[in-house]
Length: 108
Image (cartoon, rainbow, N blue to C red):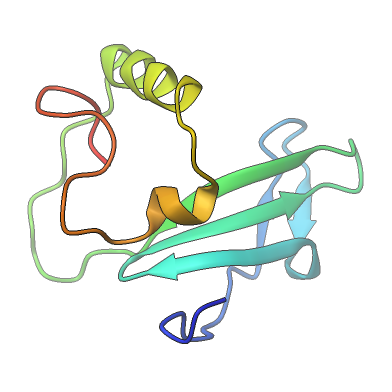
């Protein structure tokens, strides 16, 4: 990881997105962290699945809740990722331009 990725505590454990069984913290691997977004790999010993997940920090600033993710958002992100030529690190790395789909597409 790059020096700008400070080591902070990971979640104590999560549930597997496939079988919903608890996954202990030692099976969660930090891949990248940028500002309030963390990209992790979760490996479930029970069903053998590996999931790549985004974890967003909780907001304590009193900001309004974002709009729910719509089915159109999911489809647009699926289409964007289907054509993505980079790796996960470049997908979440901050850039001077925009990331992902343009205006009207899914929120990054």
